[in-house]
Image (cartoon, rainbow, N blue to C red; front, top):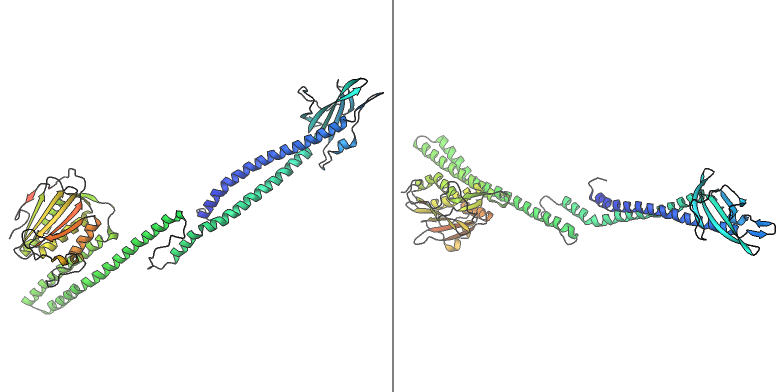
Length: 482
């Protein structure tokens, strides 16, 4: 049996206190056996002494005293004990028996038998002294009868009584162990059955385990196991979706890239240069798609970080806009950034995921804004929320289709497929992971769309390099106006 066995530990937890109790019982039983044998021996001694005292009589020739065979036969219990007696007058003169028997050290009090222990002829003995008043010529004569017995029989009786009691205690402990063993097997049967059920489950079977037939103490374990299996299933499903999405989305640009490369290898002159430009564009598209797929994988529930940082969303947004300003320049779009309010728009977020969200929101707005249009990015602290707002002057999104644009690979019908259809899906996943709310509406005062993402605000404190209260108008130094 393993030392770390739950059954062994539970059994030990039951048996150790029971064994300690049994040891106490053994000790009590031993003292009880000694007391019982002492009482029996003392009663025999008193009966023998009184039987001898009854045969003491006063005759004309003097006091006659002797020990009848029945008085000494009481001690014949098969233990070969030695029995001694002494009969003496009240003044100490010996009438019969052994005159050198030890006397009691304490003075006699009362008429009750007096018991005491001593050593006689090198052996421990138990003695009793009984006083008998014998009528003598109109008067009375005191006679003292002392009877002594060695302790071999008494000790043997104590051992026998204790062994009987110890055997009973041992049988009770053994029976308790046996019953506890079967009880533990019955109690642990559901746990063992659960272990077999987990072991026999297939690798793709994530059904929850039933908790109705289990003990209350096992309920948290099974529920935690079911929750873990649910998370594991979510992770595997996310991996399958990511693999399927990647295979589906990468197939077309890779095929196009292969075709363009094959054509470029045969072309010459201007055609070759045009083909190389097309290869470059396809490569950029493929790179962007790969990055979006990785961002989507990070935004899945299984990829959520346990630890987050407190970030100033204005700082993060400005850095992203400065890095991605070239996209607006190439598309002929005015890009403006503004920070409203005196307080820093602080959020508790994973830095990489927050950057992915802002990049995809801005990238989506710039790509779907026609040349000569405008994109305004605003960061603001509002009470308990830090808000990122992006407005564009593009074609907008019909209200009936605003919920669909957050689905993966969805593209608005009738419009040129500019992107991969993953940008807003990534935004949704990251927002939900951080408890943020997304609102989509028409741009106030004109054509276009306004997308607003409200994060739970982190506590306000001094942040180094905060952009709170800064305003960068359209065409400011960090962004180019056309």
